[in-house]
Structure formats: structure tokens, C-alpha cells
Image 1 (cartoon, rainbow, N blue to C red):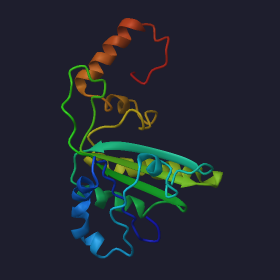
Image 2: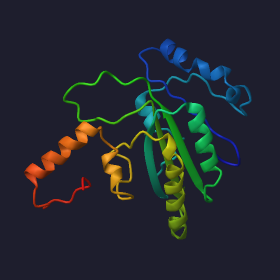
Image 3: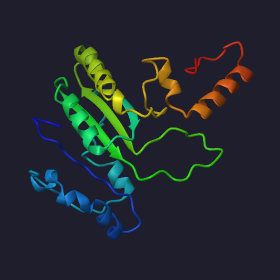
Length: 198
């Protein structure tokens, strides 16, 4: 979001161009699409080109802070909450992503990844001036905190686990968390190794 305008990027990973068009077609009839300043629809690209896109906001050089969460709330509620938070962002580039995921694949009994939801929400601050570190850190923390009522859990690979002790627990299902605790007690009873599991 910049100067009060949102940029919506929707990517469909499909086997055919036709499937991709079908997946993205609902966006054409939404109010945001009907009143868009510009539109660039149905561009077929490779994964390599997508990752190396010049529109990638995470270029080398600037300073970054980010945090994430899982949610099963409606896209309408999430967009409204993220919009309100983004309006309070510090100067520079504040980026909020709402990634709508397709229904999860059936879970296998031995899966290590036990926490997910229908939507993945990111909040990132991007800035250059070291003196803005504190204000950007505070904005990201307050943004994710404001979404707490809509949260299901956190993604262990991208959440800031140092903020609060209970965060690590919320990265796993209750059963998976208990299994991790039992393994920790069995193989590291003296707490030789640092762990976020405490």
C-alpha cells in the first residue's frame, strides 16, 4: 500500500494456463478490480521468473523486520484488519501480505508440519535509516498483535518466537507440541541445548 492505494497480486500455481485463468477469474468481478487504476491480467510466467521478478519488494540493501500468522478468518475480515494496521505504518515501505491457500492436503500420521490454516498473513517493515529500527519493529509487532482475534497459530519457519514464550507452542498442534516436549525431556533433560520449547 502506498499513498492510499493497494496493489493486489494474485498468483495461481496450476498445470495449465486455462486452470490458472479459472482460478483467478473471480478477481475480475470484485469491486477492487472494477475500480483499479491499472490491471495486468493473466500473465503466464515460470517459477524462476516469478522468484526473480523486478517487482520483488525484498531487494538487497534495506533493513527488514517481519512476522506472520495463520488464520481461518474470512478474507473480508482479514483485509479490513490489515488495512487498518497498514494505515498506521511508519514512513518507508510497509508491506502486508494475505496469502489465500487452497485446502490443505490430507494429513499423514507422521507429518512434522502440524499447524496451518486457509490464510497466511505477513507484515513486513522495509526501511533504510537505522534510526527507524525501533518504530518499524514496533509497527510489525502491533500489526500482528492487532490480528490476534483472527489468529489460529504461527508458522514456525517465519514467526518471531522470541516475542513471547507461548508463541512456539502455537506453531504446532497440541499433540505435536506434547510429542516435542517429551522428546526434549528424553534426549536433553539437562537443557544443554537452547530451545524455544520452554
